[in-house]
Image 1 (tube, rainbow, N blue to C red):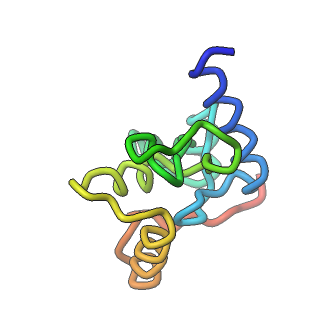
Image 2 (tube, rainbow, N blue to C red):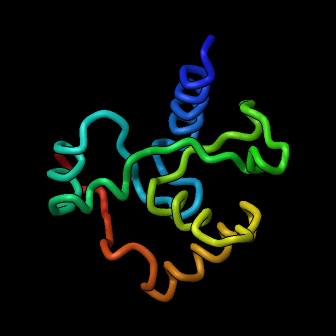
Image 3 (tube, one colour):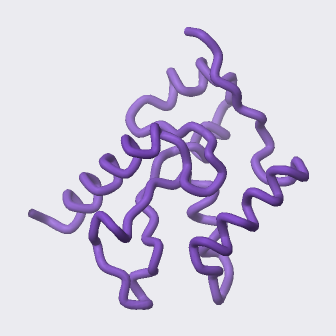
Length: 118
C-alpha cells in the first residue's frame, strides 16, 4: 500500500473514531464535500478550507513518529497548520491545551460552529 493511501486510511479511521471532530479544537471537519459543510455550518467562502480534515502525527515524522494508528489523529487544517508554523512546535498534548485555552478566550477560530438540524 502506498504511503499516501495508508495516511488517508489512517486519517479517515481517526476521524471516524473522533466523530469527525478535530483532535485539538473539537470543531467539526469535512473530508469530501466542502459545499455541504459550508451550508450546514454557515461558513462563508474560502473559510471552509480551515475545517478540512488532515492527518496529524502526534509525534512528528522528523522526530521519529511513524505512520501508525497510534500516532495519527485527525485535525482540522487550521489547527494542524498552526501547530507546525513555529520553529519548535509544541508536542500534541501541550498544543491541545493551548488551543482549548484560546477557544475559551474566543481567540482561535473566527467562527463559532454549532451543529444545526439539516
